[in-house]
Length: 168
Image (tube, rainbow, N blue to C red; front, side, top):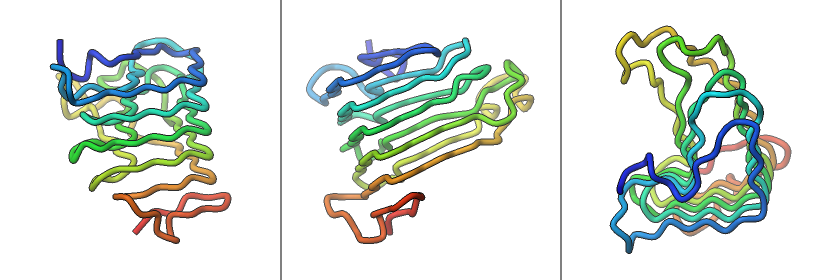
């Protein structure tokens, strides 16, 4: 099967993924798949720690927020070599399925590399679903001590100490 709904790893809330190397090559008959997808109902934090995640098709991690399931990504290397892929591609809860008002994303001590797209892309899912518009688009995003690159070089402006600073 193909598409973003068929990643190598699909995780639920209250899950920890540690010490994995996940690669999604272009050589198989799958297109636009994430390496990890976390977008199901439930509550509890999701932690992705000390992983190397490489995607040649799409985003490294695709995520959607449900109830209370903050996403923590720590000490990881995320690389998307796709010209249309980001490192992190996510959306808010949609169609009023949740009372969550502040979705949370925590990224710490990671290296994120893309070809020509931003490392983080969050969109409003309410535009894609019938009866949308009831979900929240408020986000709490915490980024600490990350290196973010676009292309092969690491510009000095991408190096951080304690807070996020976008690469130029």
